[in-house]
Image (cartoon, rainbow, N blue to C red; front, side, top):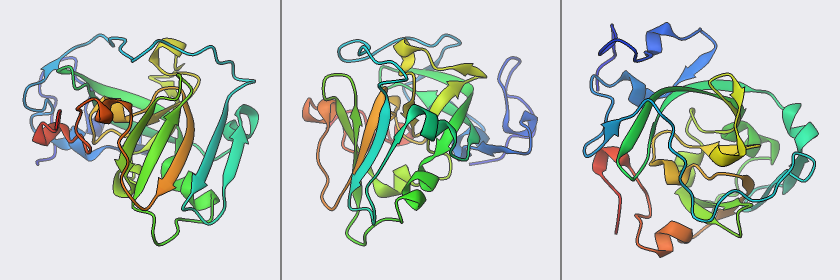
Length: 216
């Protein structure tokens, strides 16, 4: 991996263009930012298992439970009062498209875990729960706690639309985008790995785009 000193080509936002307060996802510093088998798109395709749930901000809440010191829950108003971060990151869909140079705003997953008193020693994995008909996806704790992972409510300066997972979605830039659960409602910390929706249907348990961990 090499730091980018200049844009690869016109139209690609680069790490050195970002304000000082923005967290830079390390994969945006690669000389070639498009993983094997992927193609760059300037659009943002809409893909999901069953369509957006009927979910208003008044109904939304985020719960964290399992192997944390203290289970916690926030409604929308409480969540917006938490400390915010901005993250500059690329976004790689397992269906072979990559959208480069996204700026996300939300609450760091590290901060969320910190507010729960931290992890219990046995915590090794997390199951992200979506509001869309019980949809889930699994992650190693290391991915959840990556500096660039967050629960985002803003994309490129605008509220995340329902079609893209709003009002809030998980963003884990270093894994394929299906791990960045839309319509996030809960994070369950676990000792053992547990397959989520797509993983039960043959997708990879980890999902590193640079290793092409698409399917098992």
